[in-house]
Image (cartoon, rainbow, N blue to C red; front, side, top):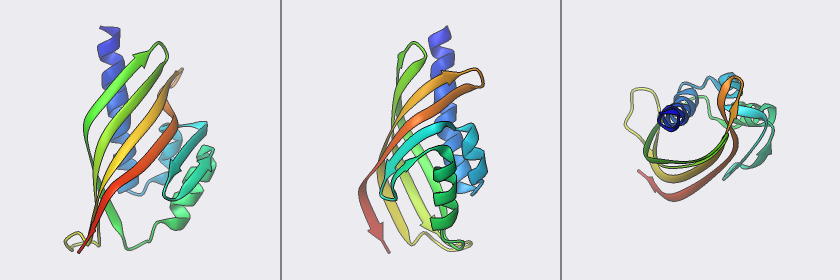
Length: 133
């Protein structure tokens, strides 16, 4: 039963990350990532949640919104650590308009159990394809 609970909590962490990004509540990434987390993506390699938050805040165009959809979430548990993979479909749009860009993304995470719950220690975000309208 504990494995099922862990898997559900980690899947919820994936969903929470998408929601925080889509709603541009970047400070709440501190409840998703460990303080010393590292991310690698087209934005570069970021070290520490403060750098992740600052970079997203600085490089996210104010008029461009996103909507992330996660599917095929796979969680491989190993005690207090887990490897997580998911396919993402990301829409980029302006308020009230149809998306002007769509991307398929391969997202892989290392999650760690903490006293506050599961958090991501590492993220590897790799675009697979992009379509611009």
